[in-house]
Amino acid sequence: MRQSHQLPLVGLLLFSFIPSQLCEICEVSEENYIRLKPLLNTMIQSNYNRGTRAVSVVLSLKLVGIQIQTLMQKMIQQIKYNVKSRLSDVSSGELALIILALGVCRNAEENLIYDYHLIDKLENKFQAEIENMEAHNGTPLTNYYQLSLDVLALCLFNGNYSTAEVVNHFTPENKNYYFGSQFSVDTGAMAVLALTCVKKSLINGQVKADEGSLKNISIYTKSLVEKILSEKKENGLIGNTFSTGEAMQALFVSSDYYNENDWNCQQTLNTVLTEISQGAFSNPNAAAQVLPALMGKTFLDINKDSSCVSASGNFNISADEPITVTPPDSQSYISVNYSVRINETYFTNVTVLNGSVFLSVMEKAQKMNDTIFGFTMEERSWGPYITCIQGLCANDNDRTYWELLSGGKPLSQGAGSYVVRNGENLEVRWSKY
Image (cartoon, rainbow, N blue to C red; front, side, top):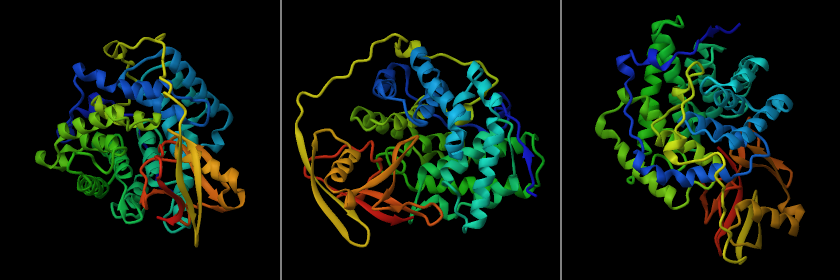
């Protein structure tokens, strides 16, 4: 029988009385809000008619106080559909995100959390993750990013889980923090947020635990922060463009674990703003992931008992503001080289519209030869995820997956986001992490 603790939501006012939890935060100044408009346009203009893609956008916009009623109503309806009709198909991390999005602040939608017993369901999914780890050499059903989301949501929303299991499974050297030999910055960052929430609950006395648990959580957090900072690039990005937002959140809440000169927050902020201006965040989930940090917010600012704030006026956003999309000047075509590599390599040349994404190349190749290039995918919160090619399917327990590469280098964007270029050498490779 697992040792279980009920962790109540701890308000930010309570947190502020803990000296060791002071945050080091930099954020976009109001006069520079105009530089965030590309992120908002990406989120506003995107299609949210499938899967759980709306969840992270709702969470992000609510967290920073942007209320666009017509858009929110549309996305909330999609979340309601997932809650009512396909909850059994939702992974543990996706369910955690749904809970966080519905309960960012006091609002009518948060009743869905309790009407549909979402906390209880998350507890069950989290425990299934733990049981799978025990049965399959420490490998969860999903991944440690989702496992960290689970702990964070349960911590913030009065859920039951085992502090002992957190201490046991969140050791910094755990293989699940790594993708091959590469430390996963966004996974480590989400773990820091989760561990910080648990630590605050322990310090505030909401949970009784031995001193060893609290000490271990502090040691884990310090080690993870050091690993995150070790991935800092010369231009200030941490890991890559898309992991930097959550890395910033983690560093905001853990400034007592590093020195002031270990991280130049303003440099990171400026580099991200430059990346935005160059169109890096064309995926709505990528845009949603980076926006809170740029506004000086973290997931630990979620508080279902506090009133929702509105910052929409500061961005000059109207609920009825028409959204215009500029069409391309002309429909030109490009040619790319595409290959699938398992034990041997299968190659073809594909012609697609200029501006097409990796997935479009795969679909075109599949039409050309379904036996060699046939694939299946599933819709996840970040977009399409390639599950099988030639009937060979990714398996979390075996830690196998289909890796996307360009010019032999792994891509940091997914099949539905990465825009291909003329003459590019694209590859999907059977890999193990």
